[in-house]
Length: 558
Image 1 (cartoon, rainbow, N blue to C red):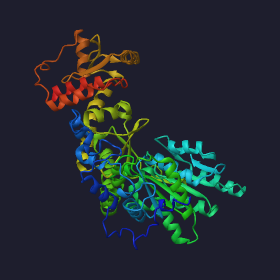
Image 2 (image 1 turned 120 degrees about the horizontal axis):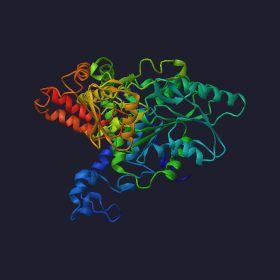
Image 3 (image 1 turned 120 degrees about the vertical axis):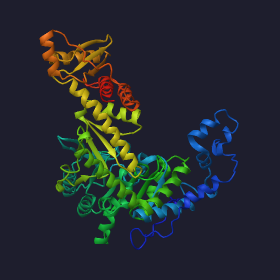
């Protein structure tokens, strides 16, 4: 490509020491802000820019409520010398990418506004040729598998393994991957490219210094793609930095100036940094040819209509990470530790069991470790599914948990989680435990202290003092599966033993005096009960059952 030299990012000139960033510039963000502040009328595209196409529309209020006037002004379609060329940057974008490369420790960095799926495809297109041999981590993102499937390469997958019976996380069998790599080199058919997924969705981190050193020692000419989508921010904290790919390469280069391995690293900046969604970095370590091939692949795969607000956010996120990242990540690490301690020590949170980091992923021979910003929690003791637990947190407490795995859910304590947010989560967890623990106990085999009622038709399946047997529990499951709601209403003043004795003596089960005279429940307790009612159909300890129990408990304790 004779005309595309300017499309390759300028090599970064890194500061003398990590963290020395004296200028505090955001050249691309400043350039986008400057054009957003001008009242520019366009005869090109993007009628919505500056809100012009909706100025007299009845939908204007909704647009502005959703996007804001500033977002509409910043979303522009200018290119070339008017702002900068995306594929052949010469101005603000080029300078922003150079600063990012310096910050992350790369030879060159590309900004993408189409997500890390596109970044992975771009990197693999640049690093492979038809017929080349690729060794891939089986746990890689779907974008890697799809790209490899379309590039005409020969792919071998290293197997995955599960952490243990007690923990649902899976990850690459890295010792086996290295064994396969060594064996291929001995056979005289070395792999040309290796793909690793180094920071997983579930919070597993790879020992990249060891893995990359081994690959370079066996076959120095191998190219490596490290999908580090969930770990972009890790570069900026001393506890997290050592296992990152670019830091590992820096260390290997310092130890051996002959280190020549080409390495590409992809980062979903929006997952761990203050970047807009689909903002992604593609970092390169390698020679000029690798940078040129990557620029060509970017032209093939990236949209020709990049989002300038997204690209500008990558510039801003980089500067924030440089100047505030260590403090923000330090807070995240502290809050994650607090969450684990609270779950392990607070009896009001005894239904939740944190999985790792202690006791999991501690064998150095496996070359993996826990991401300390992730807290994986087993909720099976609640008697509800992880899916219903997630839905309840979202619908009733405005808390979103993205991941469920078996009976566990994953909390990502990223830099946007502060102390107040963690307190909200802990309060919600305590409320849910109070509700569902009592419902689960109500449906356990033994003597019932509850009315258990299927609605419709509203006839009690059991009354306080009756035995709960397997046949009754099976009947409850059948009714629930048919669409009935199962309610449990605890008798608040008389124990099951006393009721059973009274029933044996009189043949009746009297309603305890004072039950109807209890004052009404507080609005807070009713809100918790209503929250439980809104999600239906879990296990035998259904949401509806929990709701009625919550109401009864509220009546008894108000």
